[in-house]
Every structure is written in structure tokens, then in C-alpha cells.
Image (cartoon, rainbow, N blue to C red; front, top):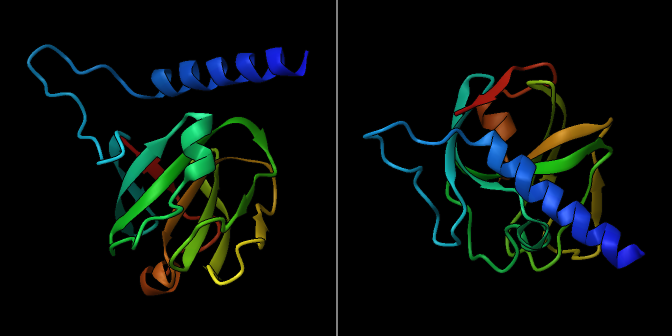
Length: 155
């Protein structure tokens, strides 16, 4: 029963993820993809712009940015979660510190700054139910003045 639920949940995530990305119009190029095969989207969050990998599959959500050597300035990873919930993230296999930006209804619902990679068991939670989580390099929110309530949009 639990396995059936997990399979159905994974299928739902894939369907929702596919619906979030518009198909390219005739003559347009398909969206750019990262080395990991994730679509790259442009996010505007408050006054900042971020090129982010969009992650929708459970497998890629589990891996996240783990095992990567760095996250360059101006880049990030956007997790499109399958349900609106208080999301929990850990620093498993991380090699650098990050900021979490918790997003719901096109607004920043919360920020977790300078999450340390030195404690792989540390978990960080959204302050309220959210649908999206953006990971950016540590210090990003301070450098760009990102704050709770800022608008978040992407294409």
C-alpha cells in the first residue's frame, strides 16, 4: 500500500512539474538544461535575478545540490514541491553553505540564511506551508536585500 502511494505521488510530481513548464511555441527553442538535465529558468525574487535549475522529481529533490563542488553567484535550485506543506530540508552531502528562500503564492514566506554544510544532519524547515523552495549561495539574501513578503516570479 505504501509503495503504491509513493508511486502515485511520484507520478503526480512529474505531471505537475510538466504542467509548470510551458511547451515551446513553434520555432522556439526548448528550455536550456543543466548538466544534471534539469530545466533552467529565470527567477526574479525581490530585486534579484537568479538562473535556477527547476527540480520536480522525487529523486532529484532528494539529491538536490548535494555532492556539487559549488553554487556560483546568481545561480540556484528551485524545488517545486508536490504539495503545499511545511517543507523540511537537510544538508546531506552538501559541500558549501546556502540560503533557503521559502515561497508560497508568489511571495517570500521565509528565509533561512547561511545554512551550514558542516552538519550533514541539520534540518531546516519552512516557517509556514510553502510550495516552492529556492536554494541560493550563502549570503545571497543579505547581498540583495531579500526579505519576507518580496515578490517571487519565474518563467
